Amino acid sequence: MPHVIHPTVIENVIDQTALHQALNFVIPRFFSRLAQAVGIVSAGLLLGGSPAFASHPDVDWGGLNLSSQQSQQINQVEAQWKVTAGQIIPQIKQDKSELLRLLNSPNGDQRRIMELQGRINSNKSRLHNAAMQSYLKKKEYLSPDQQQQLQRMIGPAFH
Image (tube, rainbow, N blue to C red; front, top):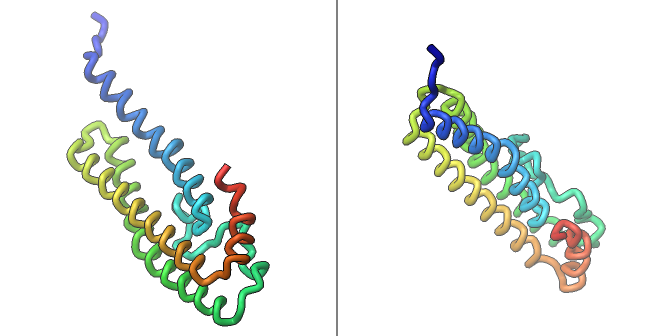
């Protein structure tokens, strides 16, 4: 007698597969684009790289002809960013690892999966908000001409 698979089992497998694909394909690429647009962190940082500060690759802060005071202020903002990212990113990585383990488990606790997904989303949101705050703070230290130069450097990231 052939073995019959109940439709809800198939739906659960499809749902878990879709969620797994979203976590590993769609979501990282979305956050990578967002990180490029903000011009604060590299995609590698958000996707599990080192929790060290990484400037947008197209921003040449030295090319903005910063004064020594501006350089010092921007370096302080970067140092604050390193601390914030260094606190949030390890938790995201730990939660993502546990989430993937549960998704790949035949008996994954759905309540725990949703709890982890919520915490990952919340922490990523906190990280992105901190990145934006860092960017805006840096921008405050620039003259209007330097801000225009900065916009030209990162402008292509918004397309």
